[in-house]
Image (cartoon, rainbow, N blue to C red; front, side, top):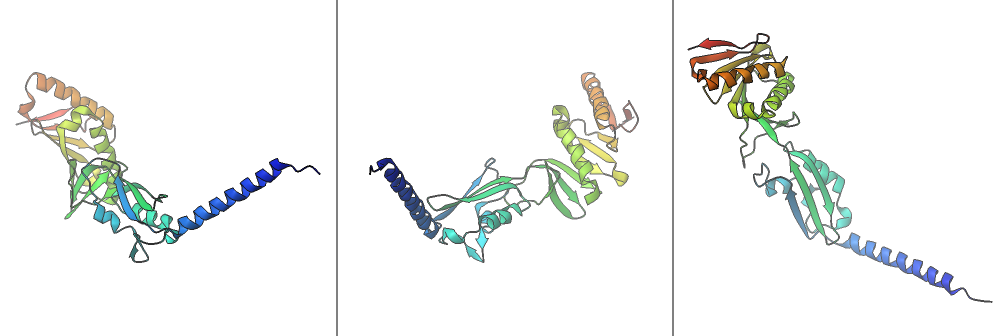
Amino acid sequence: MKINWNYIKGFFLIALTVFLVGFAHHRNIGQKVKDVTILFEEGDNLFMDYEMVNKLLIQNGKVVKNEAKSVIDLHKLEANVLSHPMVEDASVFLTVDGLLKTKIKQRTPIARVLSKGSSYYIDKQAKVMPLSPNYSARVVVVSGNVNEKNIEKIYRLVTAILDDDFLSKQIIDVEVKHKDEFVLNTRIGEQRIILGNIEDLNEKFKNLKSFYNKSLNDKTIENYTTLNLKFKNQVVCTKK
């Protein structure tokens, strides 16, 4: 009977592969976490520092360094990091050489709220974000009658301001009045802009920029103390 050496070679090759995979798996699960590395995705001005993140990478009351890789619950550790209000996104994973790596994307604030003795940020996703002891962002300041119900309106207003090159340089803070009406304070001329509500916001800002183009050109902007945008298709000014 003729021996089929190709079948025998194939069998041994499969057996060798299974052995090597099993050996590598056994060796891997017995390996300990050598160290923890933390990578921040954006910039050097960090709201969070490495110590803050390390406190989130705790499992069963213990630090994960020197723990066996087989007992590390990556899902739980990742959930801990994601639960922090300064974190927008995160991933936690183990490398083949025994490192526990954590990649973090921090939230991006667009406004700082100063209201009723409290202070916090609103981020680019309309989420509330706490202040950081490590870094203060230079963003639009919002004060006055701020509450959970009007956060979305504040977000829409501030986003519209930041999306416009001229307004983002001109508007320095926002006051929230009763009935969710807004007053804007300016950098040039120090006028108060009575916006009213955020209905027809694009039209109101279009009228405001037309007024500024004219008054800055003829140098009359300093003659006014308030610019009222509450009236349709016009800017009503109060002189000094």
